[in-house]
Amino acid sequence: MSSETWLSIGEVAERTGLSVHALRFYEREGIFADAVRRGSNGRRLYSEDDVEWLHICTKFRASGMPLDTIRQYVDLVRQGGGNEHERLALLKQHQQNVVAQIEELKTCLDVITYKVNVYEEYLARGTADRLWTTTPLTDDPDVCDTA
Image (cartoon, rainbow, N blue to C red):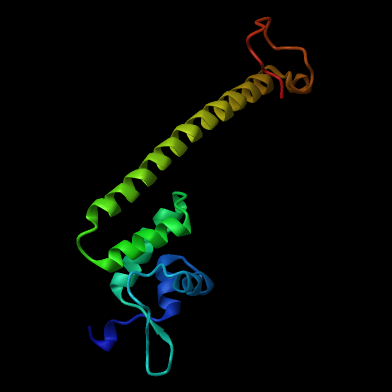
């Protein structure tokens, strides 16, 4: 790789949306698949592969993968071939966790949507002042429509 293809920490921060502080943190935590290189002036130098790797790792983090699990995955990648089953198992476990999170979020969204509908209905009827009372909008005891 020629020196013209190296990126500075500022350029990587701009391209990834991560702060310089976060990039240094990821380096300290051993999140990069390869060691971060240094120029003759001691400044960090990143490759396009590093940027792509950061995109993957930030998606792992955004999906709730703990740093320890990312570190495990990175260690497996660094070891090279022969541990693909372990990598797959780690990724499948996290995939299951994300699916469970999505299901929980869907349940939360249902509750929020219900409450939005209640508020819209009260506001449309001009009875929003009743949101803070225990007097229901409906006579159906199974419907909870208070604030």
